[in-house]
Length: 495
Image 1 (spheres, one colour):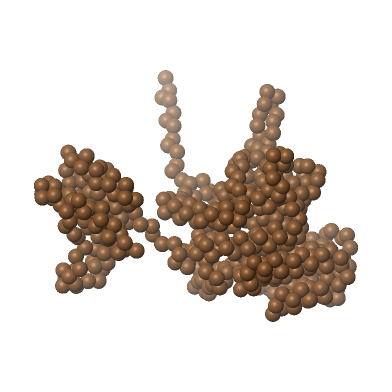
Image 2: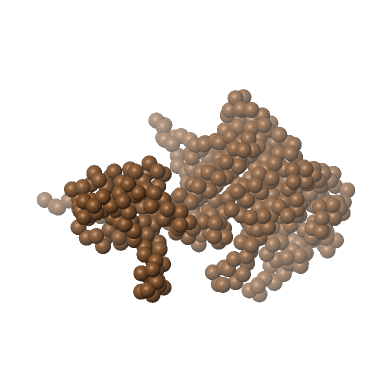
């Protein structure tokens, strides 16, 4: 009889494009999201937790195909008794689920409906450095009003959010543009209803931040040589046709009034362009009334990302401080949030246009920015560790740790093998613990405890002489009743 085949052990590897998040990262993200939620709540937005799974039909962007069903999302088909069923997918953003929720529950929801949502999203895309298939988003949207006050409020709330989480004024800028102005520019170019030409122009405009004014001009007309020396064909417009685009992209002036005047020249007689400029004017006036000056939020026509998706105002939050890239070159940190008005998303479900506007914050990028600014510690402080000198007195140690916890101090008892005391201190070091509490038989008999300042001890060990070490002890003997007070005193001195 043949031996049964041994089942191979599974490989302990993270799936491609995914990663694990450990204690410190999870805690930092949770604290930041809590701070953001407080701002959103203060603005009157309500939390919404929608399903992580939607039907592909509701997501709307992807359809099954033979070779790779629902490319771009993680999808599967529910099978019923006839071997057929709905295609389901993990959500790829938080906006499409909002459209479904609003369409489904609109009779029970207030109008306008103001909601925020935070959570993971999944995209079945090729992973790369810093690009994962699962990541967090943090959205806030207002559904059901066409008022520019909703857009101005979103921008103000974004500004307040950045300052609340630790990005100081002067280190960020919320920039605002309008898709309608661009539509007016396309009209002024005389492209009419030529959808292909309009799409080519939009794709070229989107390269403005990479190739600049001259690069866009070349790409709109005859083409250009890229950095590698390869020739990129242009759209084939005449110089006169390309001029309104250049005027649009370079219309930023010293103040809002000057910028709006330049935009009026760029759109010419286009009505939709004029409507877009009027909307920008309204947003600017509302922000001024709320005390949000150009040092925090400004009208900037060079914001072109996402213009193909949005139907009106668009906004982007950019961090303006410099960092060093992986090659040691200085560059600005860049965008951490974007959004805008999308008035046709809910229409897919209801057949009726429902105005909506909102933003999405890139959680991981914002956390990275806070680390760059030193607003988040590179290494989180661990718990106070109560060491175990006598395993038969575990109840005594549990009493100590309970006293510390009841005083609001994060603490734990060492639960490994207590035989080797050095291993207990190594454990505390690995946990980045600030303090170790020691009570052996002699200490117990004399009613005292030893409290070891691990942070100070590490600093002294790095640089202090023997004399300095004697003058600055890192271990203290205190009465057992003073345990909590002394631990609190040391923790306060470490802050």
